[in-house]
Image 1 (tube, helix red, strand yellow):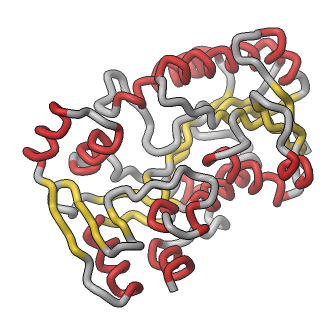
Image 2 (cartoon, rainbow, N blue to C red):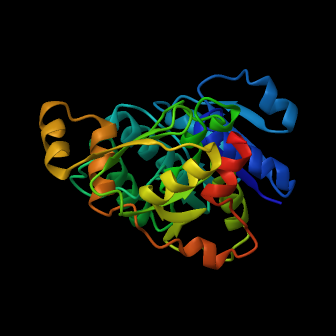
Length: 290
């Protein structure tokens, strides 16, 4: 049993990972939070430590004795995400942490990323690689939970109807809708991360998926489960370009990258961890819409 620290683990994907780790009963789980009061997590056995990411000594103290740090830090300000994670990394190095996973999720960031919010990712990944610490970049594609917005299936994620609105049986598909996309349920992401802690060595890239499908496939499955035809609109690349020029938001930037095929990654973690059996899109939709 080792100490695992989850930065930003009180909500979002971090909360799903924390609960998956606690369910294994194999490790001591520490949640780094800006506030100390999270009674539900404390009741489940997590240790909550309040941290200030601008206070190096505070971070080092919180990480003494920690074996692995998993960052799920999230902010709408890319600079804040980068600064907080580099501070966390520097403290982890001083505290003697052995493993570090920066906050990637979705798809792995790249320099001058067309998804502006993801431009916070490469500087952190580069700093981790240079640190000499063992690390991995977790990648999960699109959160399957967005298909359950309108139900409890959204979990701890922000409610968002992204591309397909299963509740109202509508869809606005980028491009032709035929580009492959990785979809993973948040609870399964937690299971993959928990299982990866048992690996003797982390791969530098840990990509996972419940299923790789096209959005046309998703609509067909959703229509079968909901028992009605969806109202489907296709947004051409030209239309997406116009939207991006006028109002470059995260949603439209993400849709453009989907249409460019960026979300068609190879889920190597599924092969490395065959005992993790993630839900398919059909299984997920049946659970929340039947």
